[in-house]
Length: 437
Image (cartoon, rainbow, N blue to C red; front, side, top):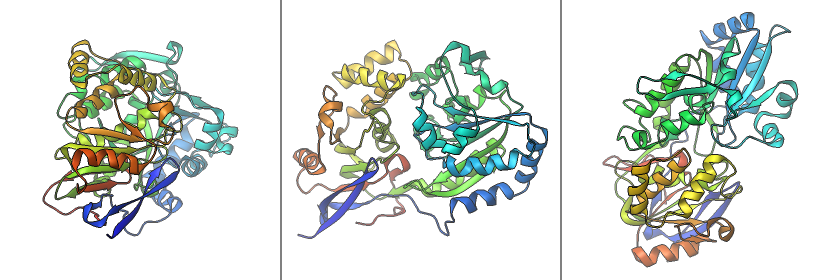
């Protein structure tokens, strides 16, 4: 029997496994793009283009204090390359102050070593680097959106002449695509705002879904939350599924975002013709750094219209979980809710009535698909992390496959999605972007 030899991301490494050819429906991956240039060339081409170069010269001539907002370690924003080039262009006058703030939302504050790895040692040494904090003294409440969402943002946003935002445009379960205003409206938001946007009012709305940025109440609310923050310039990157830069968009924040999303659809969205009995998905570093982040694979694969997994089928999630359950407030809330879940149906009924805080929203999102699908994790150190959670877990892929086959049959059909959080896969009439057994 001929077998396909496959490998799939696991943290910074890859795990190898095999499947009989007749069972493998395909490998679902986004496009790699044509004529891809190096990041430095992409960045220079974007920043040198008019009117971007004129805007940067204006900022350099006028600004006394500049705040650069950057995403945290869970997104590959290529900050070690982008920040030095950007700063070189806006620091023409000797007394201009350039600070950097890491938009962590409710996630944990980064260590000094993490900041060096994220930004580069030279940037950390030469510039003041702030981490977003939830302590009251760091936040300012300025009102409410038209729908009553409290607007609480980091005070630093109003203490600078210019704010520059750097982001990564990639599929996002609630915003449709990340990047754009989300870096500020969630990454630098207070818990009150994050709780109000990560509740059933938004997450239960049919317009709040992966890949959708128009008529999406979550995305629309983010722009309203940050409507008074004057972002003078933005840089957003689009990576391929392996984290390599495919495009750089810069200029006006809204223009940058929507152009980037248009480009991204052809990179991340994959259509195939039939659903499988089993889906094996990887995530890879840094997205599989902890259980909270890795659990998003459940929804990226199962919460789309026309999923590529049949109801009653098995989703096998392969995740390194280097940080275990995670160290932030959101991560801990999610873990605690999952530990006490019991019946997903009862949990959903209860939490829909009582409401939930940000972090616990992940448990709400994961519980939904658990009623229709079987979800299994492959984690080498599973006993330490997964014990007590409502998922079977295995140390290796063959063990998980044996479990899945007991449910779906030994000849059941399989899709492999190497990068689940960088792929929007659906069944439909047109052929997949890339299906290669």
